[in-house]
Image (spheres, rainbow, N blue to C red):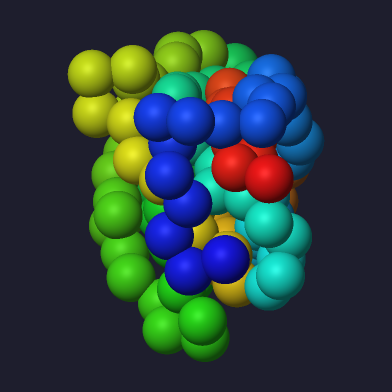
Length: 121
């Protein structure tokens, strides 16, 4: 599936993924090649769970092996949350794409991604 018709879909599956962010670029969510779907990313929220230290954050989209920074070195203050993307700035992960990132400190930041997996067949 190169580019599905999202007006006439067979099914839409809601999903939320979350986890801790490390200092190395790590995949948070992927849409594998030949999945038969496009994934609409509705929101990306980053929480700093460290009570005293700020942490930097990078958000990276990989499309067929090519990385694109969506956010680069944004400071997330201690005990705060960054709404990196919301429904007003949603985007799509096509097949063979992923979203991930890295932080300046291991396990200080956590991500939550809300998405819809859209299948046209």
